[in-house]
Length: 410
Ligand SMILES: Cc1cc2nc3c(=O)[nH]c(=O)nc-3n(C[C@H](O)[C@H](O)[C@H](O)COP(=O)(O)OP(=O)(O)OC[C@H]3O[C@@H](n4cnc5c(N)ncnc54)[C@H](O)[C@@H]3O)c2cc1C
Image 1: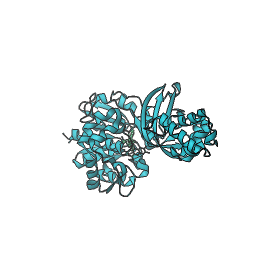
Image 2: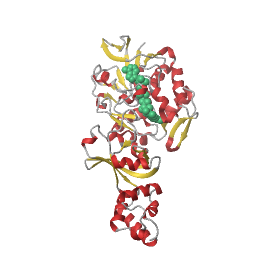
Image 3: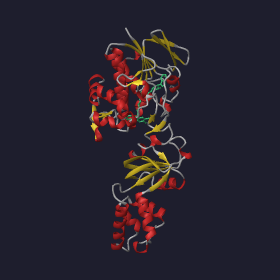
Image 4: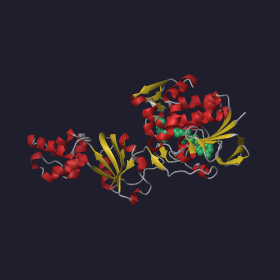
């Protein structure tokens, strides 16, 4: 009987083990930590946003450059399939929340993790096994641990995760094994889905508004070139910007951002022309000469944000009748193009996912099999696949686990 070694007991490795178990296959799951699924426990703020029930044609758009690669895996094991498996096999009831996001009814990520481990059976799991090498030996593979233990298998699934939240075990060290032992290319790594720190006066601005959330358009600029843009909620924090519209931009910030002119531009009236907003504000000022400009500004942003913008534009506490043309123009400019200088690349320690990983040109997208070393499969965040937030990353890990196991069982 074919024996598979799965390296990494995160979401991808655990689901791969379940699929092998369901097929009655022989396998051992090797996890370097003392327990499996430590990152899984943190997902969805401890509630685990397991997947997203959008149709695959829509879901696939959430994987950036990897959309085409992901189509096969997502079509082979859809969000509906994930839900059926988790509810019928793992016996964890699920519920749907806004934006088609799926969570366990209990709101406990631990229910998913514990059910996965129970299904696999602890006899098939070796913890405290940090794989450092994979050696091809005839038609077998020898997986070696850091403390010189070894197991011999017929197939290998590499599910060692990315580089973010290293306390959970996925600290990026295993990319060395992917490049060294397997000879794969690894694309540059970036922290993704995380807040963006801003510098100097801009930090004072965001920190004074810490906790305030506003709907806005957000653009990421590097050396005067727009790299990406989003629209959604923006959250001001003690050291910068966060919220869904911002975290989606983090994946484009390079480690040497300080060598470039990098900034985020916020537009608090997306879809409206600057001249139109200016004209409207001018009319309001004419109608309400005894009202402060910043009070009128609350038509566009919360009062606290209008006050902070007023301070920046030099029109604090000035009544409409006394505001100069330049003062008004500066105020409107900050409503339409609030410029926030990026302080540095966000940290891997606090990012939710890693952009970059095993180069997809060397992976068969129908099986997640290595084109360089047949018999080896790479799945989950170890691959150069990162999705937007909303259950996309776990869905990717699970679908990839499914197609790898399907290929092994053939
Ligand atoms: C705070 C937070 C919240 C998140 N929330 C969500 C969410 O709600 N929904 C969603 O879809 N995604 C979410 N994500 C992203 C999601 O958790 C990951 O994309 C997913 O866990 C990736 O699964 P993985 O199995 O590839 O990697 P991981 O879950 O990181 O697992 C990799 C495992 O491999 C082990 N390992 C590493 N190297 C070795 C080695 N050499 N030998 C043996 N074992 C090794 C590690 O210890 C780890 O257990 C969140 C991430 C974070 C950090």
